[in-house]
Image (tube, rainbow, N blue to C red; front, top):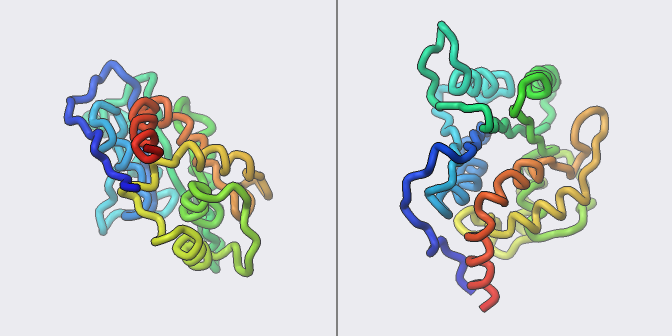
Length: 223
């Protein structure tokens, strides 16, 4: 079984189609994951912002970056992206508690922005992005010691998926992840419960854009 991107076609995207702008606080794993779908078909209008090392990737820092890239104003006449009414903005965050609990109010600020702005959305994983990766191959929420720790989830993903999760081929199972994550999703204390992620909502936006390519690659795998 070989999972490759053999169907990648370099065709300029059409601006008539809806664009999805994704801002992730993770500078590597999340970026590589979502880039898979952009590279699956270059006609798909998915833009994943690449954080620079000096940029503030805290929840409110990421929000400020998104606003600067999207929102046109007198102070910001030429934002990075040409956002139109049908487009969507997604901010992808981890719950990942810190000792000072400084993240919680920052995430609340981001959540309020998204709730009060059309087509802006917040996708959270508790405690980290690896929760979403886990559901690509597993249908049940795991129970283990220190399940609120990112390090433990990273270890679980590496050990429960043969060879670990590879963003060059495993995102093809996004439909499985969407189904599994949604069926295990639960809100607790106004945020995703431990072992929950609502990235499936972002996935539900991406899947229709790449469905024909997904089907072809999955058929190759079956054959």
